Amino acid sequence: MSYRSLASRIRRPATVGVALAVLAVGGGADMQPIRSGRSIGQPVPSFYVRAVTGPLRNKSVCYVCRNGSRPCVMVLFRDTEPALGKLLKAIDKVVDRNRAEGLRSFGVLISSDPGRAISPLQTMAFNQKVSLPLSVATNVVGSPSCQNIHKQAMVTVVLYRRMKVVNRFGFRSKELDDDGTRRVLAGIKRLLEES
Image (cartoon, rainbow, N blue to C red; front, side, top):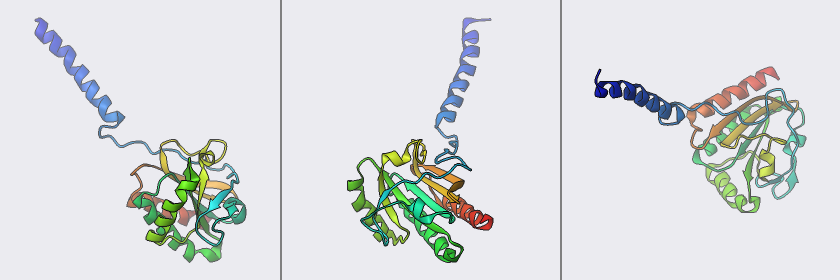
C-alpha cells in the first residue's frame, strides 16, 4: 500500500468526523430546546417589579402575590424583539376570553438597568397594542434562586396554577416564531382545562 492511499484512508474519516461535529455544534442541525424557568411542580417564588403599563403603573408590585392561586401566564424576557409583541397580543386575547375562569397574565423585562428599559418597553406596548401588565426588574429575577431563567433565553413563558409551575417554554434570540406562539397557546389551553 502506498503512502498516498494510506493517508487518503486516514484523512477521509477524519474529514467526515469534523464535518459532522460542525453540523452538530450549530452549523445546520436543529438546536435542542432550552429549559428555562423553574421545573414543573416547583413553587413560583414571589418577587417585586416596577409596573410600566396597566392599572398599577409606576408602582412596585408582586404579580405572583396578586394573582394568588389563579391560573397565570408569566412572560419573562430580556429584549423587546418583534415576535414578542405578537406573542403578548395572542396571550392578551386568550386572557380576555378566559378572565371569568380566573386566567391572568403579566410580562417582565429583565434588565441590568431597569430604569433605561422602561422607555423601550412602553414603546413596544404602545406600538403593538399590548394590554397585559408589563413591568421591569433587575437580573436578580432571572437567577436560579428566583425564576431560574436560562442564560441563553430571550423569552421564557411560565404557566402556573396555585403558585406551582405547570409548564414552561424557553426561546433563544430569534427562536420565537409562529410555531412557538402556537405551542404556548396550546399550553395555556391545557392549563385552563386542568384548572
